[in-house]
Image (tube, rainbow over all chains, first blue to last red; front, side):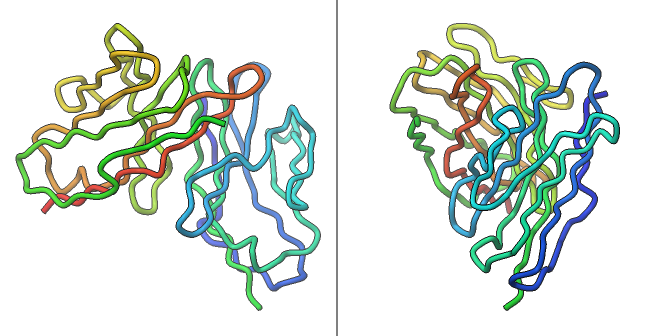
Length: 107
Length: 115
């Protein structure tokens, strides 16, 4: 069955330290993966998607088919990165989400 | 990108009553979805709202409990029927946008509390 797993509910990182939010997926076929972010009092929004191979707000994510992972990384955390992050997988016409990881940047 | 308006933004309801949530988009979109976001849980897809036909429900969700309408390409409603405290959640309307039509844009959500 198609599934997205985010093993960490909460991740606390000091400002300036590297960030890695883990995401593993289960999908038969060629996956399309996304990271969505929800800042405090804002709507859920797209952060990045693997097909674009882009860096947004310093974040990158590489699809590793061997490990079925799509971890989100940033070399130096900033306070404004504190938010809820969801990994997501396209399944046909639908997009399914992981349970989310709350990233808390410590001053 | 599309602008999505959801009403109500929040409501407190009594057990056994029903509430209808409206979703208005400022442009015509092909696909509209309804998600539920429960505290500490993932976003769960309830159904795909199909224009002019019955919605497509995900496993665990049924039309009698969550009737959905989509009369045109810019508007949809989700009704939560015969509510119980377990229905307390945030309900999100979303539409697909972007190249290849695979990026979701979300409404602000409707926070529902059932007493």
